[in-house]
Length: 242
Image 1 (cartoon, helix red, strand yellow):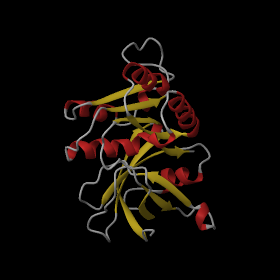
Image 2 (cartoon, rainbow, N blue to C red):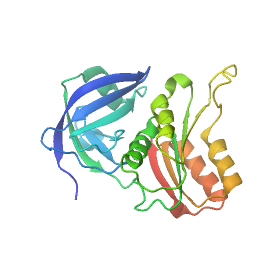
Image 3 (cartoon, rainbow, N blue to C red):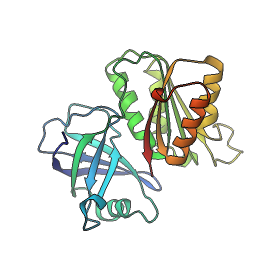
Protein backbone atom coordinates (compact mmCIF):
# COMPACT_ATOMS: atom_id res chain seq x y z
CA UNK A 1 0.00 0.00 0.00
CA UNK A 2 1.37 3.40 -1.02
CA UNK A 3 2.08 5.97 1.63
CA UNK A 4 -0.03 9.16 1.44
CA UNK A 5 1.25 12.43 0.06
CA UNK A 6 2.55 14.64 2.86
CA UNK A 7 3.84 18.17 3.08
CA UNK A 8 7.51 18.50 3.95
CA UNK A 9 9.28 21.67 5.01
CA UNK A 10 12.83 22.37 3.84
CA UNK A 11 14.70 23.31 7.00
CA UNK A 12 18.28 23.42 5.71
CA UNK A 13 20.13 23.54 2.36
CA UNK A 14 23.87 23.10 1.91
CA UNK A 15 25.98 23.21 -1.25
CA UNK A 16 27.99 19.99 -1.14
CA UNK A 17 29.82 20.49 -4.47
CA UNK A 18 29.57 23.00 -7.30
CA UNK A 19 26.55 21.19 -8.76
CA UNK A 20 25.19 19.21 -5.81
CA UNK A 21 23.05 20.27 -2.87
CA UNK A 22 21.93 18.62 0.34
CA UNK A 23 18.32 19.25 1.36
CA UNK A 24 17.05 18.53 4.87
CA UNK A 25 13.28 18.06 4.90
CA UNK A 26 11.04 17.82 7.95
CA UNK A 27 7.66 16.07 7.74
CA UNK A 28 5.71 17.73 10.57
CA UNK A 29 2.60 15.53 10.43
CA UNK A 30 4.52 12.47 11.61
CA UNK A 31 6.58 12.21 14.78
CA UNK A 32 9.01 9.74 13.22
CA UNK A 33 9.47 9.24 9.48
CA UNK A 34 10.10 5.50 9.47
CA UNK A 35 11.99 4.00 6.53
CA UNK A 36 14.54 1.35 5.67
CA UNK A 37 18.03 2.38 4.52
CA UNK A 38 18.05 2.36 0.73
CA UNK A 39 14.46 3.52 0.26
CA UNK A 40 13.43 6.70 -1.57
CA UNK A 41 10.80 9.43 -1.54
CA UNK A 42 8.94 10.89 -4.51
CA UNK A 43 8.50 14.66 -4.81
CA UNK A 44 5.52 16.20 -6.64
CA UNK A 45 6.97 19.39 -8.17
CA UNK A 46 4.92 22.10 -9.93
CA UNK A 47 6.70 21.65 -13.25
CA UNK A 48 4.00 20.06 -15.44
CA UNK A 49 0.21 19.81 -15.73
CA UNK A 50 0.25 15.99 -15.64
CA UNK A 51 0.99 14.61 -12.20
CA UNK A 52 3.18 11.73 -13.31
CA UNK A 53 5.37 14.17 -15.23
CA UNK A 54 5.87 16.19 -12.07
CA UNK A 55 7.18 13.31 -9.99
CA UNK A 56 10.88 12.96 -9.19
CA UNK A 57 12.26 10.26 -6.91
CA UNK A 58 15.37 10.57 -4.73
CA UNK A 59 17.05 8.10 -2.40
CA UNK A 60 17.16 9.10 1.25
CA UNK A 61 20.77 9.91 2.07
CA UNK A 62 20.37 9.97 5.85
CA UNK A 63 19.98 6.87 8.00
CA UNK A 64 16.81 6.29 10.05
CA UNK A 65 17.32 8.45 13.14
CA UNK A 66 14.04 8.36 15.11
CA UNK A 67 13.06 11.84 13.87
CA UNK A 68 10.81 13.25 11.15
CA UNK A 69 13.75 14.77 9.26
CA UNK A 70 15.34 13.22 6.17
CA UNK A 71 18.20 14.33 3.94
CA UNK A 72 18.29 14.23 0.13
CA UNK A 73 21.38 14.90 -1.98
CA UNK A 74 20.56 16.15 -5.48
CA UNK A 75 22.70 16.98 -8.49
CA UNK A 76 21.69 19.75 -10.88
CA UNK A 77 21.04 18.15 -14.27
CA UNK A 78 21.51 20.32 -17.34
CA UNK A 79 18.06 20.85 -18.82
CA UNK A 80 16.40 18.88 -16.02
CA UNK A 81 13.08 20.48 -15.11
CA UNK A 82 12.93 18.89 -11.66
CA UNK A 83 16.41 19.77 -10.45
CA UNK A 84 16.26 23.23 -12.02
CA UNK A 85 13.13 23.92 -9.97
CA UNK A 86 14.70 22.57 -6.78
CA UNK A 87 17.87 24.63 -7.24
CA UNK A 88 16.22 27.88 -8.38
CA UNK A 89 12.90 27.97 -6.52
CA UNK A 90 13.42 26.08 -3.25
CA UNK A 91 14.96 27.77 -0.24
CA UNK A 92 14.96 27.18 3.50
CA UNK A 93 11.35 27.40 4.65
CA UNK A 94 9.88 26.19 1.34
CA UNK A 95 7.33 23.37 1.34
CA UNK A 96 7.47 20.25 -0.84
CA UNK A 97 4.82 17.62 -1.46
CA UNK A 98 6.31 14.16 -0.99
CA UNK A 99 5.33 10.52 -0.74
CA UNK A 100 7.26 7.68 0.80
CA UNK A 101 9.10 5.78 1.86
CA UNK A 102 9.13 3.50 -1.17
CA UNK A 103 11.36 0.88 -2.72
CA UNK A 104 12.90 -2.53 -2.07
CA UNK A 105 16.56 -1.53 -2.60
CA UNK A 106 17.31 -2.43 1.02
CA UNK A 107 19.77 -4.51 3.00
CA UNK A 108 19.26 -8.28 3.28
CA UNK A 109 17.62 -9.41 6.50
CA UNK A 110 20.82 -11.23 7.43
CA UNK A 111 24.13 -9.92 6.02
CA UNK A 112 25.67 -13.37 5.66
CA UNK A 113 27.87 -12.49 2.66
CA UNK A 114 30.22 -9.70 1.68
CA UNK A 115 28.47 -6.53 0.50
CA UNK A 116 29.67 -4.65 -2.56
CA UNK A 117 28.01 -1.22 -2.61
CA UNK A 118 28.94 0.13 -6.05
CA UNK A 119 27.89 3.62 -7.05
CA UNK A 120 28.54 6.77 -9.04
CA UNK A 121 27.65 10.36 -8.17
CA UNK A 122 24.56 10.82 -6.03
CA UNK A 123 24.08 7.05 -6.20
CA UNK A 124 26.11 7.05 -2.98
CA UNK A 125 23.02 8.32 -1.10
CA UNK A 126 21.35 4.98 -0.20
CA UNK A 127 24.72 3.46 0.71
CA UNK A 128 25.52 6.29 3.10
CA UNK A 129 22.22 5.50 4.82
CA UNK A 130 23.02 1.78 4.92
CA UNK A 131 26.54 1.95 6.36
CA UNK A 132 25.59 4.42 9.08
CA UNK A 133 22.62 2.21 9.99
CA UNK A 134 24.84 -0.89 10.22
CA UNK A 135 27.30 1.03 12.38
CA UNK A 136 24.68 2.57 14.69
CA UNK A 137 22.98 -0.73 15.50
CA UNK A 138 26.15 -2.86 15.38
CA UNK A 139 24.49 -5.14 12.82
CA UNK A 140 26.42 -8.34 12.18
CA UNK A 141 28.08 -8.29 8.76
CA UNK A 142 30.91 -9.62 6.63
CA UNK A 143 33.17 -7.35 4.56
CA UNK A 144 31.56 -4.18 3.20
CA UNK A 145 33.16 -2.56 0.17
CA UNK A 146 31.80 0.89 -0.71
CA UNK A 147 33.09 1.50 -4.24
CA UNK A 148 32.37 5.09 -5.24
CA UNK A 149 33.15 6.61 -8.63
CA UNK A 150 33.06 10.21 -9.80
CA UNK A 151 35.05 12.45 -12.13
CA UNK A 152 37.08 14.65 -9.79
CA UNK A 153 37.99 14.77 -6.12
CA UNK A 154 35.97 18.00 -5.93
CA UNK A 155 32.87 15.98 -6.92
CA UNK A 156 33.30 13.49 -4.08
CA UNK A 157 30.15 13.42 -1.94
CA UNK A 158 30.55 12.73 1.79
CA UNK A 159 34.17 11.71 1.16
CA UNK A 160 35.74 12.53 4.53
CA UNK A 161 32.71 11.24 6.40
CA UNK A 162 32.63 7.88 4.61
CA UNK A 163 36.39 7.48 4.93
CA UNK A 164 36.25 8.33 8.63
CA UNK A 165 33.65 5.62 9.17
CA UNK A 166 36.40 3.04 8.60
CA UNK A 167 37.65 3.86 12.12
CA UNK A 168 34.33 2.89 13.70
CA UNK A 169 32.96 0.12 11.49
CA UNK A 170 34.95 -3.09 11.33
CA UNK A 171 35.40 -4.84 7.96
CA UNK A 172 34.20 -1.74 6.10
CA UNK A 173 36.31 -0.35 3.26
CA UNK A 174 35.73 2.95 1.49
CA UNK A 175 37.16 2.77 -2.04
CA UNK A 176 36.70 5.95 -4.11
CA UNK A 177 38.01 6.31 -7.66
CA UNK A 178 38.15 9.32 -9.97
CA UNK A 179 37.85 9.02 -13.74
CA UNK A 180 39.14 12.48 -14.71
CA UNK A 181 41.43 13.49 -11.89
CA UNK A 182 44.81 14.75 -13.22
CA UNK A 183 47.63 12.23 -13.13
CA UNK A 184 49.76 14.51 -10.97
CA UNK A 185 47.39 13.81 -8.07
CA UNK A 186 49.14 10.67 -6.91
CA UNK A 187 47.20 10.50 -3.63
CA UNK A 188 44.01 9.10 -5.14
CA UNK A 189 43.00 6.18 -7.31
CA UNK A 190 42.11 7.09 -10.87
CA UNK A 191 39.82 5.14 -13.18
CA UNK A 192 36.41 3.52 -12.99
CA UNK A 193 34.64 1.45 -10.35
CA UNK A 194 34.81 -1.80 -12.30
CA UNK A 195 38.54 -2.32 -11.81
CA UNK A 196 38.15 -2.12 -8.03
CA UNK A 197 35.45 -4.72 -7.43
CA UNK A 198 36.87 -7.07 -10.08
CA UNK A 199 40.26 -6.96 -8.36
CA UNK A 200 38.67 -8.00 -5.06
CA UNK A 201 36.54 -10.68 -6.73
CA UNK A 202 39.51 -12.24 -8.51
CA UNK A 203 41.68 -12.24 -5.40
CA UNK A 204 39.16 -13.48 -2.82
CA UNK A 205 36.24 -15.06 -4.76
CA UNK A 206 33.81 -14.14 -1.96
CA UNK A 207 30.18 -15.04 -1.61
CA UNK A 208 28.62 -11.63 -2.06
CA UNK A 209 25.63 -9.40 -2.61
CA UNK A 210 26.11 -6.62 -5.14
CA UNK A 211 24.17 -3.37 -4.84
CA UNK A 212 24.47 -1.06 -7.86
CA UNK A 213 23.29 2.55 -7.81
CA UNK A 214 24.05 5.35 -10.23
CA UNK A 215 24.05 6.14 -13.92
CA UNK A 216 22.54 3.50 -16.19
CA UNK A 217 25.71 2.89 -18.21
CA UNK A 218 27.71 2.07 -15.08
CA UNK A 219 24.98 -0.16 -13.67
CA UNK A 220 24.54 -2.06 -16.95
CA UNK A 221 28.26 -2.65 -17.34
CA UNK A 222 28.71 -3.70 -13.72
CA UNK A 223 25.87 -6.19 -14.00
CA UNK A 224 27.45 -7.77 -17.09
CA UNK A 225 30.87 -7.97 -15.47
CA UNK A 226 29.56 -9.45 -12.21
CA UNK A 227 27.61 -12.13 -14.09
CA UNK A 228 30.71 -12.87 -16.19
CA UNK A 229 32.61 -13.45 -12.94
CA UNK A 230 30.29 -16.32 -12.07
CA UNK A 231 27.69 -14.66 -9.87
CA UNK A 232 23.94 -15.11 -10.23
CA UNK A 233 21.32 -12.50 -11.15
CA UNK A 234 19.72 -12.92 -7.73
CA UNK A 235 22.96 -11.70 -6.14
CA UNK A 236 22.59 -8.31 -7.86
CA UNK A 237 20.32 -5.47 -6.73
CA UNK A 238 19.86 -2.40 -8.92
CA UNK A 239 18.82 1.23 -8.54
CA UNK A 240 19.13 3.30 -11.72
CA UNK A 241 19.63 7.06 -11.98
CA UNK A 242 18.95 8.77 -15.29
